[in-house]
View 1 (tube, rainbow, N blue to C red):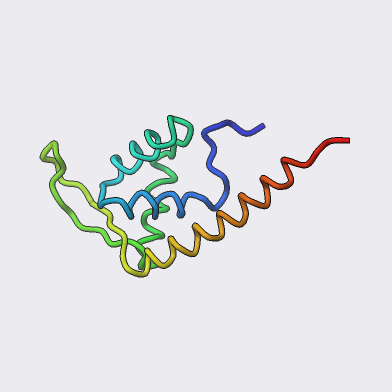
View 2 (cartoon, rainbow, N blue to C red):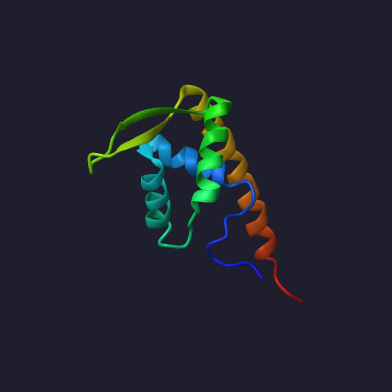
Length: 111
């Protein structure tokens, strides 16, 4: 049985792109924002987060830059690229179509 904090397969890219569309953030802040915005339902481990960020960077959907954090520590900040905005729009549209289809099935009346 799945746990509530398990991310649906394939949604992590979409979630990360959306969070980074709001503002550039470092990895730990991305994780905190995802958890906070989802009401503590969605959580991503470091073992999933950083490989996903690396993949998004390799795809050209995000860019990374070393900066100082608010705690005066050096961290890699990630920001959405123009190509990333296009990918976000595409993935968001696909998610809307999929979630709508699933909602239709779930709302079927039982006999």
